[in-house]
Image (cartoon, rainbow, N blue to C red; front, side, top):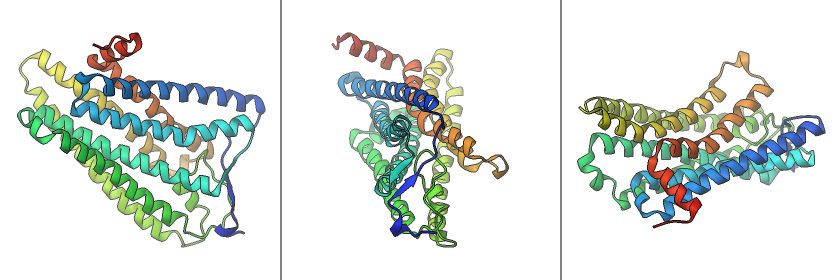
Length: 308
């Protein structure tokens, strides 16, 4: 038994016990991390440098790339370091920082994906009002609201979580620090306020999910009314990448946290957490670039140094 004041570090869940597998994991994580840096770095570069991409859709895509870089950089470098140096430890302050930044970036990304759904809704369903509803000032305000809301929720949840007395040791059953795992270490009944705050946040997230679903129902109805096949294909091509990103983001997170307790295990939780933390930041740039001709052209110009 120990209290939070006596805890100076937490012990994270290791990916492997043997040295060979640890080094293999380090090499795998390094390759994945470099792929995420390259993909999102290219998105940031082309959107910033190519004036033809200075539009609301690509402005939000730039913000998404920033959030993806932040998400994967919050957890993967520490996991790589632990695998390389054969350790499981993370300091108390480091754990709190990891919880804060991960919650902040994840919530901000979810709110941003909601804003991007609104962008696609206006572009397809209200094209004549697109310029007035999504001007540069309005886009900046919506992006700031997404980042600001995530920051506020992260401050509230992190402060509440790490103010709880911890009486169940310091072993975290995950390869990174997250709020549910920290709550498992808290004293009996002391976590109820954080659970209430989490429930309120969940209802907010549910509201965003309903908004995304309703937006896409309206989008699909509008697209199906377009008379020409070419027009329908063009409209779908601007929406499918965002829909794929939302589906990948939500499906992995929802299954990881709402799966039946009967199938829960540390190994499965480890794999699922890896999927929702690491796969979206790596996959999102490729999802957008594969279906978007403008991004492909801009990326080619970046790689050949031929901006016009």
